[in-house]
Length: 509
Image 1 (cartoon, rainbow, N blue to C red):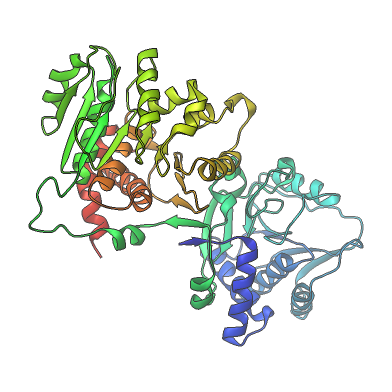
Image 2 (image 1 turned 90 degrees about the vertical axis):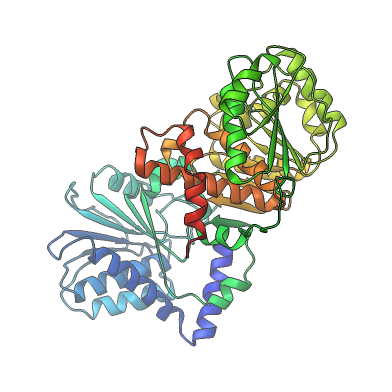
């Protein structure tokens, strides 16, 4: 699913209006009707509702919702802000007129001073002050109103966007002056800013409402951001040729593990095997031979000259893909081995975990990563790699901006792991994952993802496709595991055990 910018959505709105032969006011009626239905499905007629409407089209939405609720027997209290420094939009003015024609509705228009109504925890506040059209932080009396609403303990419903929050980037916003909604009812698709953890407190639960925008306009409008869903992965999964052998399914060379950290290597290897890689060879410390052969008998093991860590990475055979990092450690010998490998191996590879931590200790190695490679950092690894400290208060938004820039600079794909794992490509495209759950924040989960992605590449899926497919399948396996184990009891092995069922479920129509 495409995630459109505010500018793109306006274009789609205009094309919908032209294609359907309707007015902008008619499209607003569709939006208001969808919001009204959602509200009616949650609260009874006796519920006290206070609607705050701004002077723009978001206010027009709110006034239309007030009218529709009133027609259904609700008694909303409506406050329209038409202060001297602003003027009502055409649609807002039209909906004001329609609302006043209803007769005895509780309506107050604020043109100068305002005494807010008393709000309690039992009330529902509907925020229609400023939606996606907002381009600058709130100021003046609106800041006081937002803070008053936030401090009221009332249940807050935001129409389109929580007032004060921008659709994409919020670097210049004042977080004190943003509505903290419990429920956000947005239109057509989620906005990019909804996927950043620092904005979760403003959005609450998000429901995307269908307002019948033109499918042709949606299909023809380009986007840089995509939400990966089950249907997307289903379309890409290929059936197995009945005449293949293990080499046709691809070979993976996995450099992983160190003394006391062989679990990471085992999980990564098993993840690759479960996703379908034909043959996995693990390179690790010599002392791990028995461990690997016992825990993962389907994999080959290649012993390093050291008993405790990897000190050399020399590919003696041709492999479909090379991945390194899980559990490797960051000893000087291992850093030297990574250094030598990156400066001499010129094909794309996958780098995760300690491979990235080794690079972080020698930042100039970033420029030695082979073009077209994939790195899969969690937030801590990303911040270390790109020289930012968590103490700096770095946000998900800042990380994504930095990842987009770094991906282009180094010509690599960056899998920025998190609640919404984001795959950032050098062409500027960003794929946001929709699967997964908090229970997957457990040791070894990322190691499995390394195996899953590299296992897909080994089978012949393009690296670009393998990344977002692998992230989704990995998350979906975690979701299936959580239905049996519960999120709190989830461990990494549960994810591996549900990779097969996850693929079967994705293939199922």
